[in-house]
Length: 434
Picture 1 (tube, rainbow, N blue to C red):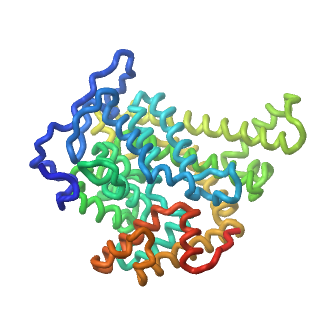
Picture 2 (picture 1 turned 90 degrees about the vertical axis):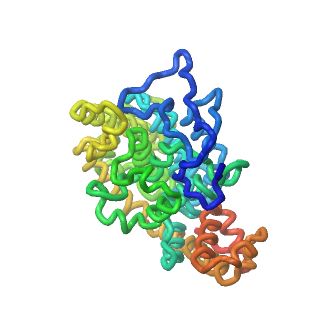
Picture 3 (picture 1 turned 60 degrees about the vertical axis):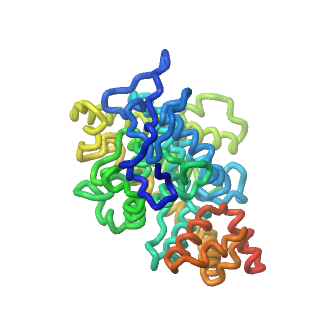
């Protein structure tokens, strides 16, 4: 039997001699899914066959492996928008992932899809994010430009297929092919007529990784992902839009008055204010504004989820899918916002882009964070002995591309605080990220 780590492509199952994971008998009272959902009982299995779990379906097993992964725990100290030391109440990559999972499960339940798969994809979608959020990603992508670049979606797939090393028989988490497909297609098809413009160029690292894993044919990259993966992707949009507003208000970058004039959000502010003014519970203006936003926030999330569920039902009724492949072959996303809501949401995102993500205070911190990541990469590349924990010896025998990728993998796994500690150790300098 060949196992992962013996230079065998992960998609090569030609000589496997262990029965693949058998379906778990449906437990009494377990919820059934619609015909066009992915059935856990019919999973295509894993690259390295494993005996079935007596207590969990294959998708539940995937979810649990993700939760127990080291990369998942590190999300506790990885930036969403605001650095962890700026306040205890700002979102991190971990709390963001949990909010995505909660929204995805709610939508999957309404649509009678496999909730466990939607949850697994939600929890795993950001495990490849480097420290300092998109600033760290930009710095690593620039540093890796000569060797294929760096993309957090590709790195998430790399994490779960090779970099996590917890099991005796394989590298990675050996997730089901359905979960790998959902991670690879988080942003839609990667090739073919339905891919986004310049998708092949923008996803070159991801496509190269999929090819190296032997998964190009297995994942059918020109088709849409199954409905559960589409639910996880749109739950990501709903979660970050709403919690970034919450964090921006808490940080003082925007006010309730600003939000009242913003696309989509304005109508909810007006409605929430009418509810709050009809009660006497608020204790002063600060408490009033806080309660006002929470009322806006919960109403917006509920409305967004409701819009997506209703629009999905309309699209499903028109498509009349008989199985999950009909969703993949639909030629469009089936889980989606109605057009009017999508236009409003785009306007709200533009508001956040200019008022929050590109705010001088945020950009000042992110520029410094990029300098930290770039400096670490350059130091490790030219002085591998400075890599901690004996890692320097492991990269000395690699060619330049292999050495650069190994260093990028190491930096991408860092938390914000570990990256700052390494910077202080190597450069005898404590950088002020304020």
